[in-house]
Each structure stands twice: as C-alpha cells, then as structure tokens.
Image 1 (cartoon, rainbow, N blue to C red):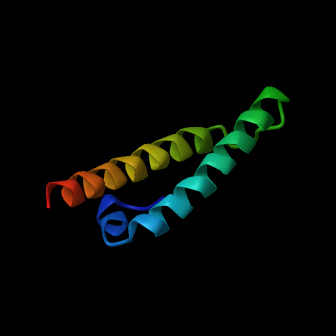
Image 2 (image 1 turned 45 degrees about the vertical axis):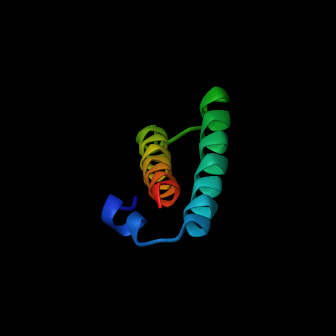
Length: 68
C-alpha cells in the first residue's frame, strides 16, 4: 500500500499501470469472495482504498495540467 506522497512523485503512466494491476486484483478478490475461497478479507478493503488513492492523485495531476 503506497502513501499519497509516494504516489505524487510517480508519473501518470506509472499510476495508470499500478491502477490496472489493482483493478485486476480487485476482480480476483471479488471472484474468490463469491466462491468462498477468500482467506484475507481485509485485502478487499486495502485494494479498494489504494484504487481510490491513486485515482485521486491522477485526477489532481490532470487538473493541474489542465490549469497550465
């Protein structure tokens, strides 16, 4: 789980790549949960919050670029 300060130093391309990985992991976790194979239920929450954190940083970077 990355901190917001670590995410802000990355480029938008890196963030989008990390976001895609987390979305895949989220899909797999939901699938495991539906089939009662999920062992670490807290991971669902961690992934969801990481996705939101990355999207927030990406949106801020896009808004900053549009303002220039």
